[in-house]
Every structure is written in C-alpha cells, then in structure tokens.
Length: 360
View 1: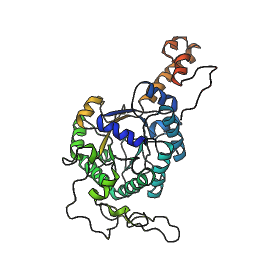
View 2: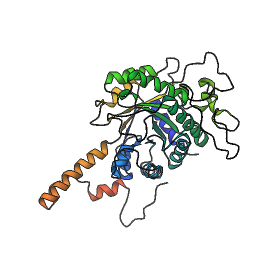
View 3: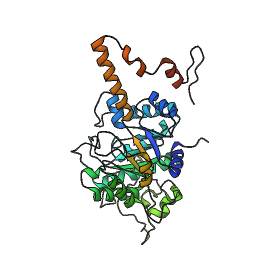
View 4: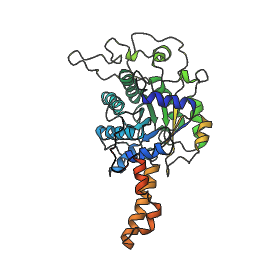
C-alpha cells in the first residue's frame, strides 16, 4: 500500500524542519523537486492572483483540487494546501478535507477569518468566534479519520495576533488543538521573539516526543477526552443525524468548546494535550521579518512555507521582460536569464521523438 503523503510529511517533520516552497502550477512543482526540496505548498493567495483575482476567497473548491492534483503529480512530494475558510461551514469543511485528500494533498490549513477573507498580512481582518472555528476543526478531524485513518493533516491557522493580540492567538490555538488540529499556523507574527513565545506556549513539557504528536488517531479519544465524534451514528455529539436524511445537523455553539455537553463525562483531570506541529509563514513584504530556516528549527517549528516567493520572482522577471520587449522590440538582452529549451525539457523529463510516460 502506498504511504499517505500526510504520513510522509509527518515523518519528515519528526526529524527536521521542512521547507515547503509555494507551487502555483505544476511546472514550478517540478522545479521544487529538481532543486531538492522535500515538500511543496499551495497558497490560496498565489493560486488566486495566478488566476487574475485577489486573495479574497473567490476560487472554487474544484479549482483548488485540480491544482493540488497537478502539483502532487508533477512533484511527487507531500503537498500542504491552503483551504482558506473551508469553502463554507462545517459540512462543507468535511467535503473539503475529503476532496483535498482524494486530490493527493498531505493536508490542509483552515483559517479563523470571517468570509470574505483577506491576506493574513493585511489590516482590517475579522475573526469568527472561537467556537465556530472549533466546530469546523472537529468536523475536519473526523473527515480525516474517515477518509485516511487520520493520516491527512489538519492544520488550524489563527489570524488573531493582528486582531485580538498575542494572548488571544495562543488561547485560540490551544482550543484548536483540543478540537483535533494536528498542526497550528500562527499568522502575522511580527518578530522572532513572538515566534518563540508562541512555540513555547503551545509545547507541552509532558508531550514532546513525535509519538505524542497529534497524528496518532488512537490517542485522541484517550488523551483529549473528545466524545464529540463517538456517537453510534458517527456524527459529532450534539449533532445527531437527521432521521430523514442521515446527515449530521449543525452542532450548537455553546461556550469555548462550541459543542453541546456530552452525555459521557470527561475525566476530571485529563492528561496534557499532545503537542501540535507548528507551521511558520515566510511571505515577503508582510508583517513578519525574514527569518532563516535554521532559526525556525531552533525555535521549534516543523514546517516553513514560502507561499508566494516563486510567483513574485517569476512575475518580476516577466514584467521586466515585457517592458524591454515593448520599448525595444526585441528580447535579446534577456536570453541569458531565460530557461533554455533543453533545461525546460529536462525539467519535465521529456526527450523529443521519444514517448513520454505520464507519472503514476
């Protein structure tokens, strides 16, 4: 049986801090593999602007799954993918997890912004209530267990640092881990010290080994006291299946947990919540300073994404070349900067006049 890409990515993160450059198309994905990286990332921002629209949640689920499939096939790498706000409420979040899994992603991240969302490094963001996001994560975590035995990674992004402050970001992140998130993505942190503070707050001293990371589904019920998905119907507790449709109904949002009380009382003193993987975002021209990958390793981050880097580099070159062509009527001076025909063919593993086999 083929190893799930989520399992592969967890294994990598358990041994090192993984760099995941953003791939906005399959050709960039091949270049990422050729350069020797171990993972790739799909950014909603890069995917949106590559389609000619701003990053405000306009692209469809089908657009993203097509891109995921192309990037995963072309790269052969585990791909972490942006899912914005989940393309809807809890039921749609479940579908998103399953469709991303089917498309070949290692995992996705969901964010706690109000829709229509905006880039995490812009001002003026608004957040959904914590219990609203908790409900989505619970549904996403159950979908991962149902479609991949929990191998598909559920990452929760919080944008609270720029809206409610650092303490609120940490509080929300803890709630998201308790809800079932395997990984936490603190967006918009503004200094190395803040990354250190966040990591320290999220790391549990009693659960620092890889075996205790969220990613072992058999530990969830034992350690998290989460009866919310243990009903006989498989629906979240507090969300009994509708007798006429068999579909889970909306869970009542009560308190910080966001779910109705379970008939089964949790242990009075549950063990510490397992320590989540941590994701850092190295986007340019935003609120976060550029921090080297080895420093993120020192700080305890497992995955560092470079979401729009390759697109910015490419579009800078495109813009300069177009200006030259417009003004001078020739592109001669840019030839040394171009990828040659042979380099392009090498990248896609193509030899003219030889049958090309689609990767499997």
